[in-house]
Image (cartoon, rainbow over all chains, first blue to last red; front, side, top):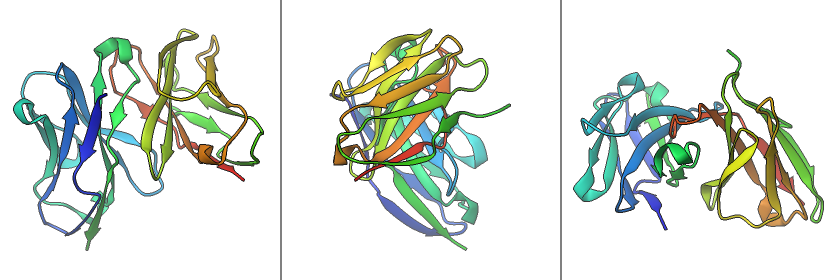
Length: 116
Length: 113
């Protein structure tokens, strides 16, 4: 069965520090990859997505992620975090494309705490 | 544009009872998916509906069911509640074919006593 693994459960950084959150998935075929974010008191929202093409994708609020097929990874990065980035981050995988529009396999999530 | 609306936001039930949760998608979105979120298992896919038909189903027992109406609103039902069904139930809507681009509601938090 497909699965998604996020290496860090809880990350604490100071403002202006660089961020990298790890995500690995297990599936040998074509996948679509996503990062979702949940800010305190808010609903889950899409941060960025990868379907095909340039493996380096950019999302909202300065976030980017790199798809490395050989490593089955889709790590999230941000060069300089802000206090407002404090949130829970979820990596997700879709298998099956448009016939499985709403079916995502989520990782367990990483809680990011940014200290001012 | 109104977001995804879920009702009720909080509810408490006892073992053996049944519960129905409602979801109104974003206007124009015809695909509705349901997820269960718990501290131990994280976010798990329950099922997805499009055009009043279940298109995908996750690995949950038959006690979990759902339906979608002609106006795209969706309900999910859990019968014979167990303590382990305590969770946040999230609804997400999307445009069919817009793979994985889900718009989530704030969820219905179910506590089973």
